[in-house]
Length: 456
Image 1 (cartoon, helix red, strand yellow):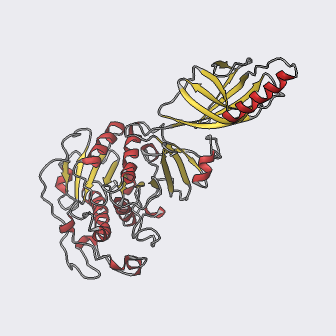
Image 2: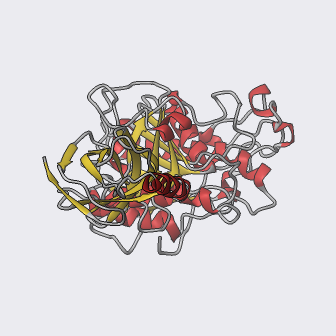
Image 3: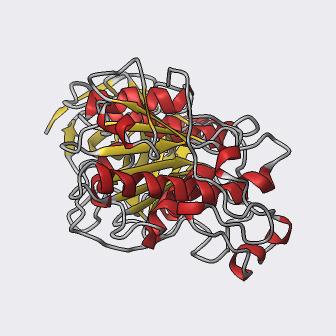
């Protein structure tokens, strides 16, 4: 399972009235309730261990009231109800087995009746001609005091989604199997789509977990939580490493679907790098992209189009930096390498420098001339082709005082006053995709004076 960990750059840092015909409960309540076509939901050790002993049995399908709302390019604004228990509702809709189906579902305390789920489907339809289905289970996703019950209801919601897929094969098109589906879920919804995947054979083409909920799932058996075996391709997106439950309580938790939403229309600003750890990513050891690094773009273009014939399971983590503001989450990472010279090689000087790249600044501190220095900048837009590069330097405060003393002594013994100039010999700029740009200069400049570099 691929995992994406995102860091914000500071510091790095549907709608008509519904009549639902749910599965009829054969046995309700108790430790192992059974709900008709959905099967039984035992409370064995997998579901009661690891702190889950207080988790109740899942509620009935009637209570949870899972609903499916279809958007296509033929009905972007007016959603259509799809009821798996009434196949004619699907046959008479704009649902087409000639295109991919993407199901999107919410998590704890949330809803699929409008909000981000509705908006995400609208964006997906701009990018891809598909059946986008919002799955709502608002009656079962609970409120802030009902996390235990919502955790248990995940199993029933996943079962209803799997039943939906099977009903389309049975009543609409026998050839339209799970390989035509991509399932996307946020928070508890990530485990919902994992549960749906477990119940389908073959597995769905792709499953995407957006910040999968951790409490009562982390460290549990694979049958309980989102797992790499739940789909032909399973990807989990994570934001900052905090315990995540409710959107209302945690802004960062909500960012997961906001990042994914922004990637739908343009994922080029979400290049992620395979790294062993976050620390390695910060140090730049996984930068830039190369042929063997298998970099990928976080988000929608990583899962669509989906290749159901190519199933791979790996546990590679990918890291990326994002912007810090909604609608500006895209971030392009550049490495700037600076090599300098100075007019008086024998005189010690410690200095700072600023490289201005098309009005974007890369700052260097505590530089020693003659050495190669590098830093990273994260920008909200691509700067290619690069048109202008300038260099400017300043002596540090401590060095400035030391230098003045040395000059004074030298003057006392009759030496002429010495002016130190520093110049950028060359500046190398690397993009995350591995493109490299070289700028050079032969001259030097006084302190606080800009020096223009040209393409080498």
